Image (cartoon, rainbow, N blue to C red; front, top):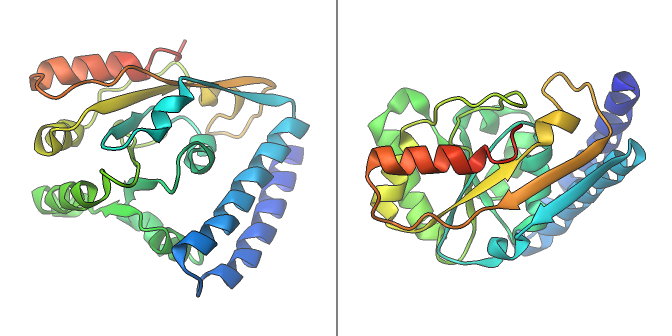
Length: 223
């Protein structure tokens, strides 16, 4: 099952990515159609392997002026959020922009890259770009810093508190269990991937209070 999934998913994904070259010269609004095609392709493949998707409180994805902080267990959410949100921007590792072709698409979509080797300077850049986007475009961050295994609850990276304090905007935690159906090792399991938008965390909490609250909320489905 693992190998049949990998063959089907990556083969069809490669076709979509090649077709998407046609969208590079187009305006972002038009290029988004290729992104939607990319997302729909993944959903169809998951259905073939009997994986369903359930979204709870999805209306929160339409709220402006919020920062969205998500659990990250799979490739799934990085693709599917393009369906849930209207033109989202992800905060991601700068290294991803160097991936052939895919990196070009990320730049085209206006993703916010963080260079961890630059420390506070890079964090300042991320805060500035997020501040530019947040009132008219969803910004999504994965505060654990990398994909984690299902049931694993690592501490959050401190940069998320810097953003919370600097932006003074509500943070919407997103809990999910995608790592159960589609883990990092790609051993697919049939079932339902649940995504739950939790109640926004309002500005004003201390660092300890905020990190504890956010950690608890994004892990609400991680069991």
